[in-house]
Amino acid sequence: MVSVPGGHFSKGAKYGSEEIRIYSQHVYGLVGEAFLYSAITEDLKRSVPGKRVLDIGCGAGKWCVTAAQYGAKSVDGFDIQPEMVELAKQATSHLDMVHIQVGDVADMPYDDDSFDVALSLFVTSNLSPEGFTKHFQELNRVLIPGGKAIILAPTDWSCYGLYIKVEADPSFIRNKIAQTLSTMPKYPSTAQVTEAFKNYTEILTTLFAVNDNGYLFHVEDISRLSHGQPVWYKCDKMTFPNYFYSEKSLIEQFRTNGFHVDKIDNNFTEDKRAFYNSTNPPILVSEDYVTHPTSYVYHVTKMLSEPHKVV
Ligand SMILES: C[S@@+](CC[C@H](N)C(=O)[O-])C[C@H]1O[C@@H](n2cnc3c(N)ncnc32)[C@H](O)[C@@H]1O
Image (cartoon, rainbow, N blue to C red; front, top):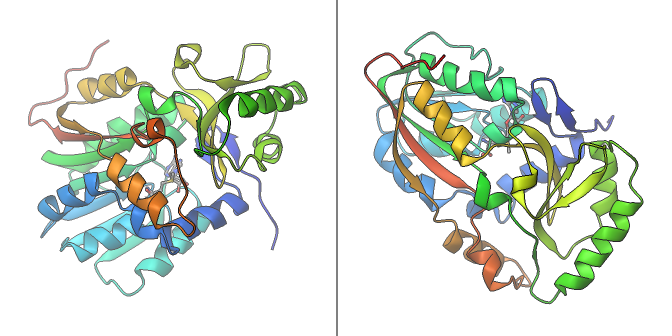
């Protein structure tokens, strides 16, 4: 099979064949359950029974399966990558109430007011700035007034720092990173960034971006990032092409598109601890890593009145 590289494209970031393979193993492999974060499952159990649910950027379909298991009346999932859609179709083939198709967040393939509940989990960080804005306009269009959405997104805090296995030495890793950075070409491709850092097995999470001169740098200070800047998330298993959006940008989208923010959750800590402890052998991670949020969960409601557009 031909291996397709991932990268940043006009509609947003796409995974390459290898990332899709690793990602779907994470979702459905032995440790897959750890990725069904309790911050979301508890709310889903309460909010989806009997409802029409939309899973935006459904990936390999794990949340479509979960929403169906929790008693949704129907579940529609879409994703821009046909390979993901294929995985999601396979995962949900036994569930009659689930429908999966290819689609773009910028032009969601549904009528107005079609859904009671929408999920957008780790999707906004995959979108180019134009896709990011359209995602929220389209979310408003397809949800009924009073409909709920759960948005899982890495924002400011989750983009800080270098998180490594506890036995690794931070200054040794930082020096090694600096050496690798000095060998990188200007404006590297996703394949080049992935290749350069693929043997950094000590790293659990860190972020790279390109500066104004085209050179790759290690982001340990997010004030160096701007709205919608292409970035690469390096985690222990893979390197994702992504885009940076601050919490302020997200809240601004909720405000201009008529959403009320009901609550913002971060309770990944216990899930992450359980995940790392469940691996064999268990991976020891430093204390700051388990208290470091990888993302936040934004629970919002589409308000009954028309959004107040700011011009
Ligand atoms: C990190 S994955 C998350 C998948 C799934 N929501 C989950 O939590 O497992 C992000 C997904 O967003 C999809 N995506 C990126 N840009 C998109 C777009 N413009 N429209 C629809 N899906 C998109 C990607 O193909 C990918 O499957």
